[in-house]
Every structure is written in structure tokens, then in C-alpha cells.
Image (cartoon, helix red, strand yellow):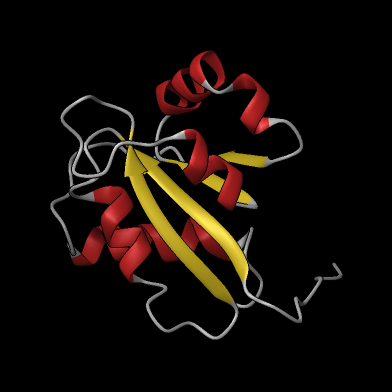
Length: 117
């Protein structure tokens, strides 16, 4: 398997429902990472940061925690998703922010998609 190594930071966006536990934990894993720039948002009206067209325009790769998040993005932002990589991680909403089990699961699932992680 050959990996492509970016000469610049790859912009990645993490999406969950409320942007309080899963996607925020994922974003924090990339604080000060030399090859990835990460942001996070939520799909629901009460989200800490609600996903917008601007988030999707900024991101090169979008990771969602559940299929329903991908469905919501496609319904609301079909045009903005054109040409973007959208990955469903299948991580259930049962881990609090920063949980060690959540971090381990994120690392395991992201390693397949982000070779420099």
C-alpha cells in the first residue's frame, strides 16, 4: 500500500451530533499535529459549534461518527460536499469527552485514512 504524504497540512473536519464529546475529542487529537489541521462541528441545532457550508468548504476530508450524520450533511449541503472525501467512522454516542476508550477507537479507525497520524 502506498501512502501520499502531504507537503502541507491536510484540513480535516469531524462531525457528530452536539460537538461536545466525539468530534471535539477527535479534533483535540490533532492539536499541533505537523501534517493535519482539524476542526469539529455538530449537526444538531444545539451543537456547541453547528456545521456550516463554510466548514465544509474549508475541509478536504470529512469524518462523521455515524451514518445519520453523513445523511444530514448530504441533505443540507449536497453542493458543498461535491469532490470531498466523506468517511463514516461508525463510533456510537456512548463515550464522554476525552475518554480513553474513545481515543483508542478514534486512533484505530483514523489510522486507515490518515497515514501520518
